[in-house]
Length: 280
View 1 (tube, helix red, strand yellow):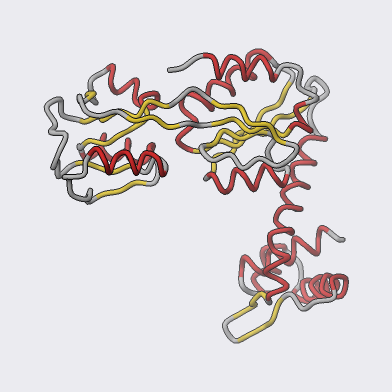
View 2 (cartoon, rainbow, N blue to C red):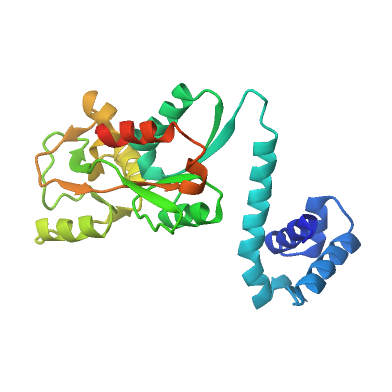
């Protein structure tokens, strides 16, 4: 299969037009049309229909899109790895949930960076679903995630429990019926335990899907929230945030490793041991 044809197909999908795709790729519209026809002939399905509203994917085009994106990503990754300088022995691609970078992600990254100077590193932040997909498709070699969904060639390593504490920009913040309280999504178990602990409290007016966004909000606008202790160490130390005496919770996270890649990394066991041994 021609990678140029796949690139052209994706350009049409992303721009919604053969004309705009030709502008993006800096080729003529007839070239774009020819590449698309060649791809459709090879697959045996119509992938794009042209309507007044623009170029629209067919059902077959929709099914191809994910594979085309993965193949192009893998090709870019292969180009990057094969063009590494001679003094670099290999590359490690790490996927990390946004809320797990500070503390866990940064520590394993720094460990490999310092102890393995011949290994090139790349970090990609994403949601739990994206991380699972990237690992499955070979776009990353390991993930740091809250929701491991390992396949047969992947191993799972539990990280120390995250301590979720109530923090506030005011030291005397009430623990119940606080209008400035922000709810930060921290998994189903936290949701159940939080609901039980605060059964008499109303629903928070503001909700954030990640702790990093919740932290940024209360630092800017004031308020309180349950956050992983490891991500607000600096703020607690300089007293821009205060630890409020209230029920505490915990959350588990994991490192998932592609074992097919890990066999080339004799240093990985030590890096994981250091990460799983030490807490905040």
